[in-house]
Each structure stands twice: as C-alpha cells, then as structure tokens.
Length: 229
View (cartoon, rainbow, N blue to C red):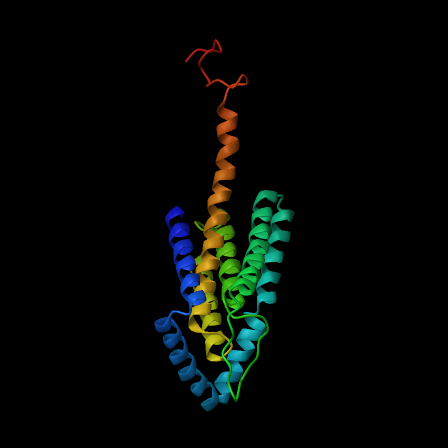
C-alpha cells in the first residue's frame, strides 16, 4: 500500500505540473479525445441521456458522499469510532484537496457551440472521478476489514466499484464537461487519498500495540523490571 500511495502521488503531481504548464502533447490529446466523444454525444442523443442520468444522479458526488456518510453512521453504530473517523476525515480531506486544486490550477472546461451538459467550477481535477474513487475505495476497505474472507458477494461489489469509478470518468468526458486528463487526475488523487488513509489507519492501530508492550517506566519488558524471561 505504501508503494501504491507513493506511485499515485508522484503521478498526480506530475500530471498536475503538465496540466498547469499547458504541455502541448497533453493538450492536443485531450482535445482530440474530447472532440471525438462530443461528436458521438451529438449523434446519439439516447445514449447521451443515459450518460447524463448516470453522471448526474447515480454517480453524482453527492450520491457518493451520502454512501460515505451512511458508512460512517454504520461504523459508529458498531462502535468502530476509529474507522468511522478515518472514513469521514478522508472524505472531507478529498473535498478540500479537490476544491483547492481547482482554484489553484484554474483550468477551463471544454467549450462547445452545442453542449449536451454543463458543469460549474474549474476543470482539474474531476470532482466526480475523485469523489467516486475515494468513496468506492473506502467502502471496499471497510468491507475488507470485516467480511472479505466470508462474504460471497465481495467480488461482485468490487466489480461494481470499479465500474462506477471508470464509468463516471467516461461520462464526464463523453458529456463534454471534462478533459481526459481531468478525469485521470481525479482517479490518481482519489486513490492517493485512499491509500494514505489505509496507511495511517494501520499505523494508528500498531502504535497502541507498541505502547502496550513497553514497561511502565519506559523500559523494554523483561529488562530492568525484575521479571523472569
């Protein structure tokens, strides 16, 4: 997980620099993909409506945040306050990071003479992609803590999470409200937040265990305390 956090963080920073600098190959690729998908969206209005429902309702950030909030409530009900705090804190951290980067980069969204959808705020990173990645990643992590070995529906839920994360990224570019690199940035930053949350949670669990093994006077158990080994 440490490697995953480092890799996703480094790639996110690299992509951020390229976007902020307006690197020509990236800009050209973004526009090429966006224009091709926009032509398809205009040519297939029925499929476009399906994408709007998925993007604006099923995978909307507020839907994802509601799932995260429900998870926090469930964890509190089970008296797992530490895990609840981590889920809530990571979700809030992701929102702050996302909005901060949007304001910092100030990237314009695609503009079309005949748009099929609209969106607010700046483009990078994609809030839909980042929020879906954070929420789905945290939900899978919480389930893995308790039921992965015994719950038969684990594989199906993992697939649903992957489809949601990839799917929402697709809809944002298809509907012409994000560049592909916005979505990639959202995925990378979202996963970095999840990986960092898991790492810090594991560290917080190990720390009390290490403290409990220390002798009351700060020494190592079995040394200088008169205990037999």
